[in-house]
Image (cartoon, rainbow, N blue to C red; front, side, top):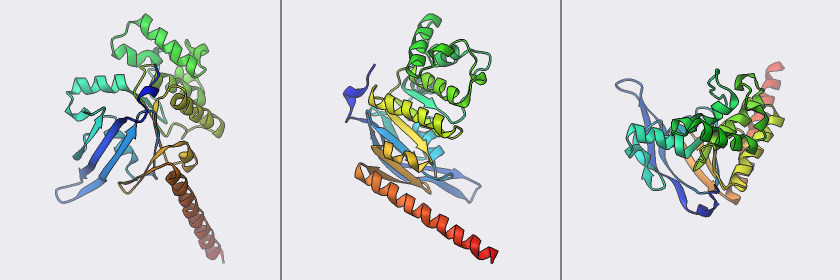
Amino acid sequence: MSHTNSTGNVLIKADKIFQSFSMDKDETIDVLKDVSFVMKYGSFNIIYGPSGSGKSTLLNVLTGLQKPTQGEITFDDQNVYDLKPDELAHFRANRIGIVYQQNYWVKSLTVIDNVAMPLYFLGYSRKEAHAQAIKALERVGMEGYTKKYPTRLSGGEQQRVAMARALVNDPLFIIADEPTGSLDSKNGDMIMGLLKRANKEQGRTIILVTHNMEYLPLANHLLHIQDGQVKELQGQNIHEETMGLMRDMKKRIDQLSRDKTGDEK
């Protein structure tokens, strides 16, 4: 199924999201602060920021795992936090595909059954689920690995299987959470290529979470998150933001180099 027909329409809308955590009676930490944005069907979105910036918390809010303290987030005008727990679980299994940096496998099951797992949850028969899983594995070039066990595959192969599992339920969007973090550059580029293909050829909405600025040019919509606040950028503004980030990084490296040289004198 292609999702290209809906391009330009709003898929996800976040409106004035706050997420706070109480440390004790007197201390509250605001992890997300007044976050608002819109993601459209068929877009390639990147959530970029350093460790501790609030990326993980925003991801949890997006995937229905963590209800925001304030504000509203809607998918197709449906507030997922209005759903009952079983409805929310069904929404996550049916509408979202997720690829993690470290994926979770049922070690006793083969590749095909791990890929088919979301379909079993949705009530598919084993025959139906296997047929869908094989199609998904073909899309990532892993159809020859159906009877192998994921934990015995290389890191790059495991991420390709994870991509197949993310695609198997024909999701509205795919969230890739630091999917290349544990891979070498060759396998990292391969995974990014699969995400680009899913976006360009199948019309999938992609949400890539990363701290790696070299991927920013792939986006047509960027959420730059820092200290819980989000700057929303599109088009040429993404290029300008990337150039600014690179200049800032060079300045920091130059300063560290000068500091180190001074210490050695």
